[in-house]
Length: 317
Image (spheres, rainbow, N blue to C red):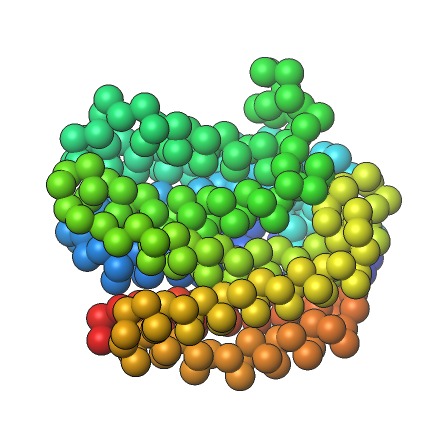
């Protein structure tokens, strides 16, 4: 992933590379991780798993693309001041309209995946299912807002990220919704589901997804403050964000012990093997500022993925 020096305009890469950069693959694990755990916890058919995996990944990519567009038009992505990874719109590789169209195209795939899941599981008339699908897509646009397309419904100046609700969105949708949707669909078909355990997994994976956002917001808090992007790091400061980061890690790993005790299974302790990686992230994030935090955005994503893989393996033990 390209990280330009502040004030650097990069040469336009190939069209494929522009797509890869705009999609931000270094954090795509945030949508893959809950799908792996969800599969291991309820063992759906492969077509349902793959449809849900596509749904979650395209929600994240669509959100990233609209964030790329919206941050640029609202002034948060400026080549002269940006300390994060390269952005396709800010670098001039895509026009704002092209970036927005790319987001709409990706989220159309999200909707198609939702339709497939509804038809395959007989949930076409399930209002709760459609609320989750449509709110996921809506929130992809609402995460950073922008004149288009939210302006058409009077919400052009409103966003989750700019109002400081990004952390909650990530926990709810990349934690609970992403983990619980497959068990919920199987439950509607008559399969028994251990709901307390599923909620635990949603909490663990969701909190680790939040750590990715925390590092991102810590890195960008000074530029965000200048454009009135009121993330939690801007609202409450660096110390609060570090405490929040430590809290998310601590709760995720304490719930490993709870899960192992409840299941009376040593295999459920496997996620503890990722603790040294998490500890290195804890120390590094606490000692690092600005652009130097870039590796720890991806590092937090790697921690979450390693944790999720070990959790999924423990469920299969």
